[in-house]
Image 1 (cartoon, rainbow, N blue to C red):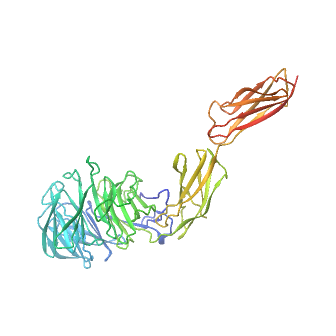
Image 2 (tube, rainbow, N blue to C red):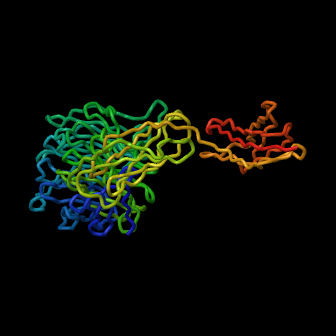
Image 3 (spheres, one colour):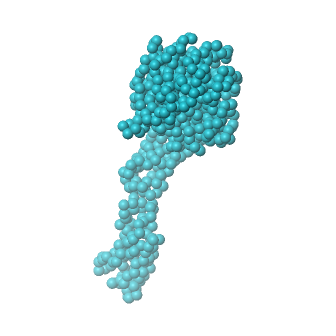
Length: 573
């Protein structure tokens, strides 16, 4: 088993893999996210439909063969509970708004199945027997499907949009090149969304558009293409989803990540989602029916996350729950259009596949049902009390959290702001009593402001940031002298010593000023050169007898404070 649950530096989220035993948490099992896995009996994949009314999940393959096929039926626990027989291999699926009928496309047309009895109603529409797969959607009380009237080259031919109501099929007149993808749902029951896939026949600037399906005639709404004047940034559509309130449309774009659009005019939403992890290519997207979550699927290698579950509100920057699939028993990426939620947001269904797209798995993931508050208590303190440039500094504080006791440490992050800008510090664990210490080594003299954050996780909401401003002083230096108690005027004398400094190492070529004070006054002697190990030596022939005082001084630099030391020697003849 090689599935990884990942956590960001700012979050340590709850996770219990019920069937395989992988656990990590900020909450016990009652609040944990569970992932149950079923191996799907398919070698290709086409569509996933979730029926929340009857708690069923339907999965089809995309074999493109004129042989009898089945739609595989699972319950909400990931157990296979049946199958729906089709005349030919099925491809697309759609559920009626009331959940009573499942529509399945095949080579001869569209089939209908009663979702209560799991039986075929005998309703079928057909225009052509075609080898190209049809996409299906349900909006405005009607069925809609795409059709490429061809036996081959499905990605380079003209695709037409048809509608059906009762036993009547009608052509809408809308068509374009390549594969046209449809999306609809109870969030906006009269809206049909169409997106053009980037294929061999559509390489320039694919579009996305919406239709009003409420009336007798399908009325097209806004259309958007994404390439700039140089042809860059074109849409590479993998999936479409509508938010629970119908106000937003999310697009899984393999070229740009997750696009979030205003459903009214397809303009960019004011606040986007954060980018997918580096190396992850968008493949699927789905909103939970309760409006709380969005799931974003991707194709990524190794430990890079393939699935992010996070708040549907893009302004909520709570750290996402992340999954990286990279095992032979789980798949290693989310299949295109491979995500679907239960209406209540209690379960996410995810289809994963292997690198070659020949094996598939169904994951049933249950995010936590609640989030709890968190807060910083008291003020931040520092140790030592006087910060010194180049020396370790601890910023101490306390985090208080509601809800279940974490079984693994929560994480705190911090940012230092000084004259050089912002620097993100290494995240640290929160102790069991809520205390934490963020470590830093200030690099500039002056004020440094530290902002400490807990950005939350799927169990806990973020805490309000706390800050502390710390004056950072120069690093102290010290001069230690070794001098004789007495010396001879005729023989001369020698003083040795060492210059030491805290913080960063002293630069090369440091010298100390040397002054001599005797009964004739004070005079400056030749400077003493400091060796790389800080040692130095002063030799002198005193000019008078009696007490002579030698003072050595280091002036300091941008990072180090100055220091002085003196020695008094009794000089004889």
